Length: 267
Figure 1: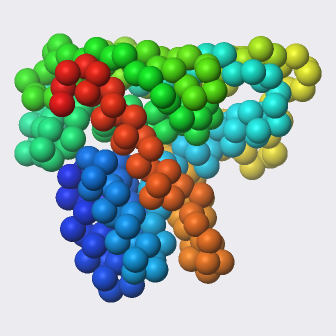
Figure 2 (figure 1 turned 45 degrees about the horizontal axis):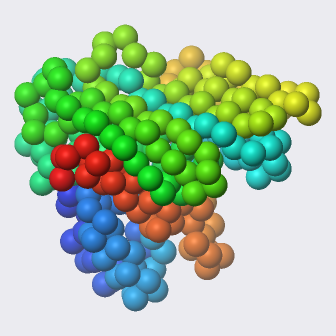
């Protein structure tokens, strides 16, 4: 597993692949589309599996949300909104020379904290074809954004928004809103705020999943998501298949974030 600073993954992945070692990389896969693509290509060339850590895909509520989309319960998708509203003190950025830098972190609030919500939005709503964004550094002494907002258009015609900031002390961490003709789902963190569909079927979780959602410690949820994703990676290696979140899947979130940065004039 590669858990080094964001802009250092390429060389590590190349070295591992050359030794025929399968690679599971923390988000982001790397900080440019070109570097991500090179990681993907070298792993394919060397015949090793490549996965990107997006553990929220493996949590029960998001698994059920994805199933609802696949089953057509929303009807036509209309709007998809993703927010990561959190706080990081200046000391957080000062604690590592790579944090808050374009060259080593690749961005700020969106590339580091908001990327999980970006991945979920893409996974649920599909590819984005148009972006209009604004970004700024409002409360920190860093060279990248601490606040960003973007309007997006999806390939299926749906519309949406993405917001991320590390400047709000009393935020909502991660919020995902999915609106369709026949259904609405709103999730704060992993807490279901609204789960309403025309078909009337409620959210159903097995006992183990209910225990996870009722656990008071966020650590329990985080570990479970990582555990399940690592388990999927092991199964992919043993079964000679692609991991559920492949390198190509991981690259999608980076590509969209870079498109947002470009629209906002950051790069």
